[in-house]
Amino acid sequence: MARLIRLSARGFNRALSLRLQQHDVTFGQWIFLRILWVEDGLSQRELSQRANVTEPTTHTALKKLELQGLIRRENPDDNRRRQHTYLTEQGKALRAVLEPLAIEANEVAAEGLSATEREDFRRYLLILIRNLERDEAEASKKGLKVPPKRGWTGDV
Image 1 (tube, one colour):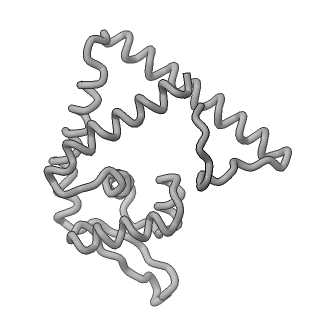
Image 2 (spheres, one colour):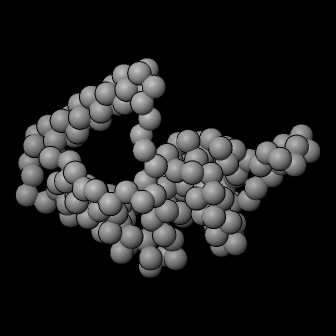
């Protein structure tokens, strides 16, 4: 099951990436734009946590978005160590262009499924996610941590 979900996620990412590249946006940048469209003005740490990636990864993506004129970063209260990220008007306007591409990728993936099957599938995935989050929380209480990805070559 995990392997199939991983392959499905990879397929979704690739389907969306094919569409995003027409607008000079990578899948990694998409993740941060999506977060900022919902909640603008987050710090780099907050963005990293919401995207579930490391801060250096976030920093690299934000630098590229800034160079493209899609975001601006500001230091609140003259605090040079903490920057907050805000969408520019161009970054905000991109939402109307990019979100339909994600919907299109979802539609391609769900082709052949009825509305009921789509809703059931979504519900099942949410159950899996909750179960796995609970499992990780229980392991954490026992002092177990998820091993770093670097160097790991296994597949589930």
